[in-house]
Image (cartoon, rainbow, N blue to C red; front, side, top):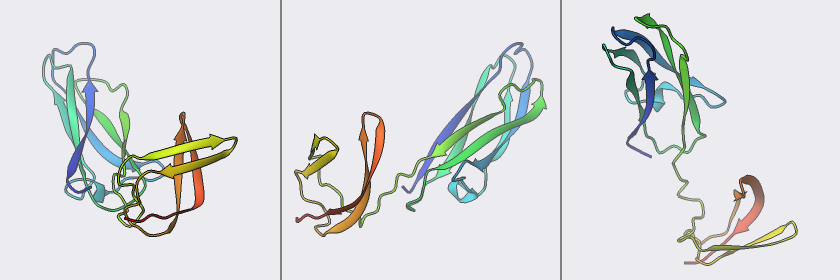
Length: 162
């Protein structure tokens, strides 16, 4: 939704921590649906430098994500450290996913969690204890999570009255 959220990446230093160490970092979109500059605060792909002072063994890099109200797939990004000074890099990258948290206001929504189901063989019957918020018939698709298995259900018509 609108507003901002933060993805925190923790950089950890092992071994001799008596001196200062630093590395530059940058973010790039990654995966099947890569994040773009518009997904981050300021409209640019984040970058910077992380510096660990003497005796510091970890530091957090906060990546500020810009919220929006666009319904879209989850988007991936990778933060990568580049060689800096005062330390050698071990694991130099980590990935994160910006989860879509937007809802289609025109899609049927249950007014409360009143859903019952009855499974007989391969047929599942869903009974909605509450009326659908839109009050109109809509052909839709949804998924059912049954014991960790997500099963797509298509060609279903939902209707309800207020």
